[in-house]
Image 1 (cartoon, helix red, strand yellow):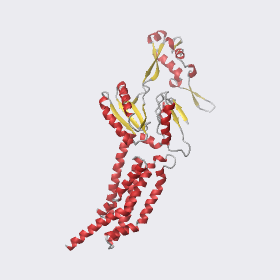
Image 2 (cartoon, rainbow, N blue to C red):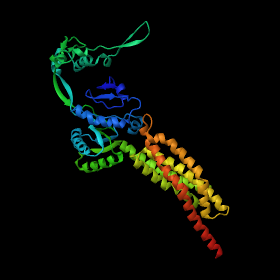
Image 3 (cartoon, one colour):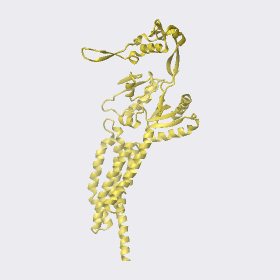
Image 4 (cartoon, helix red, strand yellow):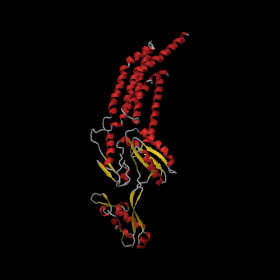
Length: 447
């Protein structure tokens, strides 16, 4: 276990962090699971139930832990990101609070929270410029002394010391030890010196301190200020959750402050774009395969018979995903495209042999039976090789195996149905269509 509490030391470290800390109240706990562990989702589910009961008043949320989810999030710390964009931050905050309360009622949502907190404690130092000027100090003198005491001189006047023994330059920073600045009285006693002839003084004689609260971080997207509502999905598919979320957003448009808008980012946006592209690719793959077979067979009819195995393949994909409780996802659609190629190849084996038998003088029914009988072993071997090869992936075996399991399940389910259709349904369609075609040709020749 590795704990990262508060903000990183510098902005460089913050830029390399995959979390979204905004203040000292944030902490990341990174847990490495032992070998032969259960699916990660099971541990996350149990922690989501137990942690709020054990630590009331603390907000817990889980960052994407696997590479696939991090890529699909495109750098965001949560799959769901509802952004309220506008310049009126106070009005947008109230609207975001109401919207968050309504989104919490959506089944399947979890880890919902607003990223930007509006109650970050702060200390406001009001310098009496007239009094400081009468002593001989400027506003910059007071600010520089305060910055050196609290953050060190490395930010105001970087100093380096070259070690003559090894030729290495070391950064030297002057800073008051943190244990000596723990109370407001310690802050009041911070020494203030200037560049002129002003006598040394303390901060209490030049400025007053007051407590307050403010926005912890100001986030921007395309220059406009935004308030992010982050959330995750558990126990339900992202598509169903996104549909309910968009219904709430559409119903909330009337209460949206003037000049503001709502933008949904995260995996919901990626899912819509990916699904549109993959479904278009699936249809395009079927059309392209059909046209390619048309060129090879020099016929428009036989490629149509070959593609009769694809409805069964698509039905098998849907059935197997439903039986295993797997939602339609990018890996599942990728497996569907793979299944289309294998199912089409097996169907070509059967139809090409049936065409040869038909040209040798057999009837359409006899040619179909011979094709199903003689191509039974090659088709079965090809399908079984693919199914057995995808079985470990479908079972989710290995580290992070559950991420690619939908791909294997789509291929296995599609080939189970497509193989049966290729060996029985496709020859039957070939027999019926070519039988009717030969009969009509024979009738035309007699006339």
